[in-house]
Image (cartoon, rainbow, N blue to C red):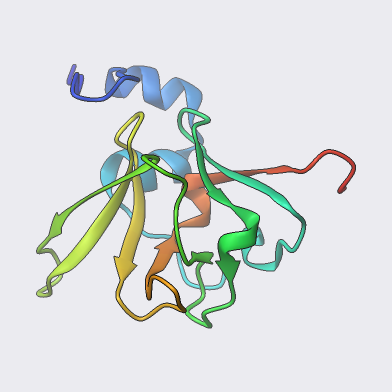
Length: 138
């Protein structure tokens, strides 16, 4: 029964299992990665907001989404204070992991090879996100 109280939304692993799909739990709570090219969000073109699939926090605006060709939904910037980062030394490399600032769910990684003006590529697991289209854009 591990609760990470440093995040505003804190649940036990059992509570997360009750609210997430198996794939969402694997990605968000166990730092998993979905296979490249498998997320339906890759093809999403409507205006709206991308939310954390775990807690519903707004993370990315659709206007920041771009096709990076990497196989995962990519964004040039996050919403202010929505995403946190930490050092990831797994898989024999050093990367910057991203997590939801509200619940701590693992989202993906951010790389310094994105478009301007910030030069960032937030490479996100689609399983960690949900999409809310702008009113009237269905």
